[in-house]
Structure formats: structure tokens, C-alpha cells
Image 1: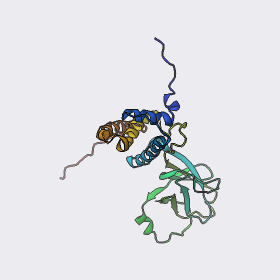
Image 2: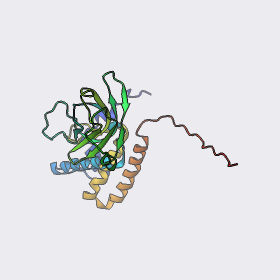
Image 3: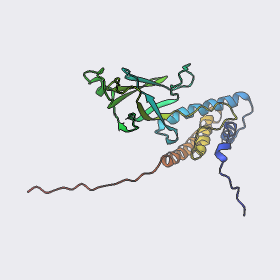
Image 4: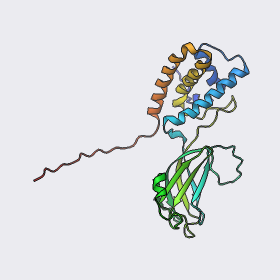
Length: 240
């Protein structure tokens, strides 16, 4: 028996098909433009809620910042609609995971992430030199990174290389594809069905919620990449 020979289903699964499938699961058909718009709005809200579910590895990206003499604070933007025209600006940033100082020889030196209290306890925040620590602040419209030490003239022109979590892209036009990997297509559809049931089929909300949470949990467990783990027993020496 012949098979299709393709594995492109998720890339051809458009937003309007996601909406149609979700409506069918609650026993309805989207009959008006308002119902389509309502479903797309719910889908965007669900994508935002996923940000509270933990790290989504397909949204982890890498970038570099060029260091400026005397500048300790660097800004990334959460949205692409902030009006900023800078060619070096980074958009869609939700959080910073890790950073390294990269010198002119492309050698990386890991930086330590500190919290607000640790940064506040630093006695002289204007000291210049090679950065060794960084402090992240997450605001409504932007994420800022404050370096310590402040880059000096020797460090200017070198880089901070970092990994960051990007926001899931909006649904946008109905003909768009969703910004999720194929593993999350089932829970995306069941999640949208759950959201729509709250508005159009409340008698099925509990049922839809159970299906959604079950499929989302499986997708989250599968997400990420495996790595080797090593467990060493702790040795205790009896006192003499």
C-alpha cells in the first residue's frame, strides 16, 4: 500500500482551518465574520497564556549585542509595533535565558545572572571593565539587560551573545500558518475549542478543558531536547 511520502501537514494547516476544526469540536460551524474574529482573538489569548506554562523550546533564539563604551543598559522590545526603526533592535523578546561576553577573538566568557537585590547591593555600579554579571528587568513593552561591570573603551565593539525566549507570533491573517511546531497542533486545536466553548457551548466547557489540558501536558513533556544526565552517590565517612 502506498503512503503519501510527505510530512507537511502542520505547515499547510492554516489559521482558518484551526478555527474550523475547533468549532466542529463544540458542535458548531463559524457562520459569520464576527465568529471568525472572535475565534482568532481567543487563539491569540491562548498563545499568551502558553507563556505562563513554562519554556517553549521552539521559541528560544540566539542573538548578539554590540557593546558601547560607558553603556550598561541594553533594551529589547516585546512587540514589533513600537515604532522603533533601529536596525539593531531585537523584537518579540519575552525573557533572557543566558549570556556570554564574546571578545574580538570570538572567545566566550559566561556571565552570571543576578536578581534585583544582588544588583542593588553592588557598591559602584558605574565601574568599567569586562562584564561578568547581568540583571534582567521585564516590563510591559520591553526587556532591559543591565551589565556589570559597565563596558569600557577596551570592551566597546565586542559582543554580548545571548539566548532569549521569543513570544509566540500572533495568528494574524486567516491564511497564515500558526507559529507552533507540529507536536502542538493537537493541543492548539483542543485549546481553542475549550476557549470557544466558554462563549458558545458552556455545557461542554468542562469536557473541552479536560481534553485540552491532557493534550497540552503531553506536548510540553515532549518539547525540548534530551541530554545526558549523570548521578553520583554522595559518600559519607563515619566519624572515628
